[in-house]
Structures are given as C-alpha cells and as structure tokens.
Length: 279
Length: 160
Ligand SMILES: Cc1cc2nc3c(=O)[nH]c(=O)nc-3n(C[C@H](O)[C@H](O)[C@H](O)COP(=O)(O)OP(=O)(O)OC[C@H]3O[C@@H](n4cnc5c(N)ncnc54)[C@H](O)[C@@H]3O)c2cc1C
Ligand code: FES
Ligand code: FES
Image 1 (spheres, protein in one colour):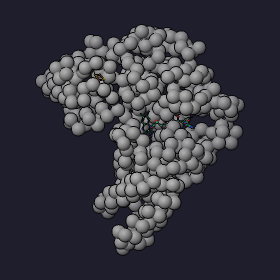
Image 2 (cartoon, chains in turn yellow, orange):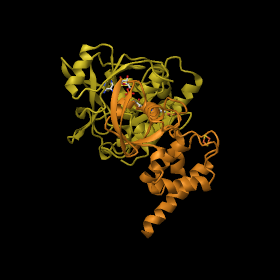
Image 3 (cartoon, chains in turn cyan, purple):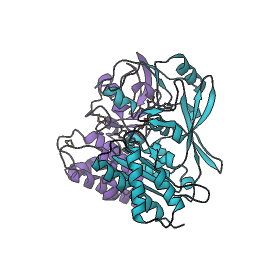
Image 4 (cartoon, protein in one colour):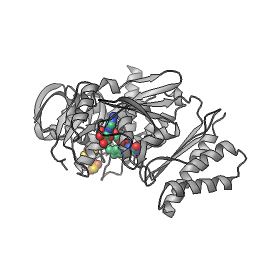
C-alpha cells in the first residue's frame, strides 16, 4: 500500500536538520526507514514532512576513548554485526545485531532509529540498558544533553526525546571482559521478540544488569534478579526463580501465563549463558 | 515532486518522482524494470530485494528520494554477471523455483550470501534466507542451489 502524501527534505548538515525540526512541529525524522516506512505504508502512522538525516556525517562515526565507546545514531545493525567495536563488549553487540530482522533490513536500519522508536520488543533498548549506556540528544537552541538509558526509555513508543531533539549518538561504558547472555524467543527467526532477556554480570564495582523486553511497556531492568546475582552468590535456584518471577510480574502488567513462562525461560537462559563464561 | 539522479544497472537516470515513492515504485513504475517484484510492500517478504551501493535492501521500504547519487543493481542488471549466472544455473538445475515470484529477490540475496560467506554451510544459508519468503518450493531446492553455486564458485577461484 502507498503512504499518504508527505513532503521530503534532506538537510546538508546537523545544524540545518536541527533548525528544521525546531521550526516545524509537523516534521518527522527518517533515518534507515526500516520501521517508519512500513508504518507509513500500512498507514498506521502519518507524516507531513520527512526530514532525511541518513546522510549526516555528524551522526555516522564511532569513537573508543578507552573508557567509553560512542556510536553514531546512523550506525547500522549490519555494521555492528560485522564486528564494530567487538572487543569493547566481548562480542555482545554482534550477537544482538545478528538476530535483528534480516540482513537486507540490517543494512539500512540504524541504532538511533531503533532506540528512538522504542518498540516494546526491540533488541537495542534491552541491550543498551543492560550495558548501562546513555544517549546524547541535540537540539537547535539547547545544544546537547546526555540521558541515561533508564530515563530515555519511558514507555512503549515513548522516549525522553523532546520535540525538536535528535538522538545523535549512544555512549556505552566499555566492557571488554563482560560475561553476558542473550535469550530471545520469537515466532519466526528475525521477527520481533515475544521475550528477550539480556544479562551482563557484575565485575568489580560494576553491578549486574539483567534487562527484559517483549513486555507491555519497553525494556526494563530486573532489579531483584540483578541484585541477588551480585549480593547473594549462594542463593538457591528457588530463590533466584522467585526473584525473577516477582520482577516479571512487576515490569509486565497483566502478564499472561504464556508470557510469564516465556520471560522466565529467557531470563534464566540469559543468566545461565552469562555464568558459563570463565572469569 | 522530487527529481532524483541515480545509477541503475550501470546507466545514469534522472527521474521525477513523488516524495512518497519507494525505490520499488521508481523501478517498476517509472522505469518499467518489473523484474523487481513486490509481495507485501512493507518489508516482510524480501521479494523486492535489490542492491543499493553494493548491499541488499528491501526496495519497498527505501524511499526513492533518498537514493540520489546511489548505485542500484536490479535483477535486470545481473544478466551478464558471472556470479549470478552460476547461481541462476543452479536454481534451474535444483528446481529452486516454481511460480518465480520470489526468485529475483532470492537471487539478489543469494549473491550477497555467497559474497559474505564464500562457502556457506546449509545452516548458514537457511538462517540468511529466513527473511525471503517463498510460497511454492518449500526452500529445499533454493538452499541446495545456493550451496552448490557457492561450491562451484569457490572451485573456480581455487583453480584460477
Ligand atoms: C521485517 C522487519 C523485521 C524487524 N525485526 C526487528 C527485530 O527483531 N528487532 C528489532 O529491534 N527491530 C526489528 N526491526 C526494526 C528495525 O530494527 C529498524 O531498523 C529500527 O527499528 C528502526 O531504525 P531505522 O533507522 O530504520 O529508523 P526509522 O524507521 O527511520 O525511524 C524510526 C523512528 O525513529 C525516529 N528516529 C530515527 N532516527 C532518529 C534520531 N537519530 N533521532 C530522533 N528520532 C529518530 C523516526 O522519526 C521514527 O519515528 C525489523 C524491521 C523489519 C522491517
Ligand atoms: S515487497 Fe518488499 S519486502 Fe515484501
Ligand atoms: S517460486 Fe513461487 S514464491 Fe517462490
């Protein structure tokens, strides 16, 4: 099906793009288009004007300063799948990227687009929450601000980005020795998750973070589960299972028995995988 | 109305389009390149796969306007391509198509799989093809054809 009519502009620079977004409330950003165009084609959303940011150099680069890695909003899932900053996160980003959609979609879809959309089943929000990342948002008049992932992800399809703001890059603390686990349940390979859990175990001062998505809202941290893994190393399987259950019931309102089992499975599998890495 | 200039199958073209036109609209409706098939028009089936600047994309969810200065390869442009020719022959030999609706997308994807994996295993081909939907063949022939084509192309490289 065809989308309803809209205008199209492709600003030449980040500052032009930000000015356009400030001056025109009806403008919608398009990056890879891999979520926006299907939604426009199906007419589940509409746009008056698309501001194409896909060629803005300022949003493309990446940088590793030895403590944190910054990844431009326009970096594609495929570029990450192919090994971008593999060592900095012990391969976690590659594992996640490779299971998003299909290669032809990953060639276009971007990290910034996935985060900004905040689909309740998307992979990057959960992964970056588990890695304790933050996003940098820019606007024409207020410059840049940094937003921690917990505050950035507000609800299904809702982020802390304000009107006129662009997500420019993601900043992730390096975890070269990370012991991590990922478990995703989908109806079909490449589809959005019924449940997706990502566990990154604590190390030194860094706490364990277990994130779950495929829930009613958007990716959330499992606080009790993460806490037990750090504080109670002797915890029995039953104690851990109970913490997981309590966390799921808290983050997933009106969870059905199928969803509860599904989440329980992904969370335990991700934790077991993370624990299987040698220290 | 937007004017775009891009390279399609090696020829530079300037086309006037609607801002809302997808790359598949531009190919099929403006340039009559109907080898690119449209199954779902929302990124779910892979029938419309073409190469944009050397990598496969789903042309129904790429805006034509964004393709300014891009290099597009469609199934029509692979007629004399040595690699696609080998893949095509194996599709024929292994009965990898029936109605042919999915085939252009399958071939465009197959070439990219072979480029990235060189000699992909059957399992890798299956995983990579999971986004390309075929309603006829049951996939066995398609998977076999890609594995066999990759083996033949690898043999050619070894003896070259
Ligand atoms: C068949 C298929 C299967 C998929 N499966 C999965 C899956 O399993 N897991 C998964 O996570 N995703 C999946 N996706 C979605 C895919 O990952 C998208 O690429 C991603 O969600 C959006 O990125 P994009 O660059 O294409 O964004 P776009 O579609 O261009 O934009 C998405 C939204 O974000 C906004 N936006 C984009 N960039 C910015 C920015 N820099 N600043 C502010 N706002 C911005 C846009 O205005 C729009 O509202 C799938 C997509 C398809 C077509
Ligand atoms: S027609 Fe483009 S993916 Fe189905
Ligand atoms: S041959 Fe008919 S859809 Fe694949």
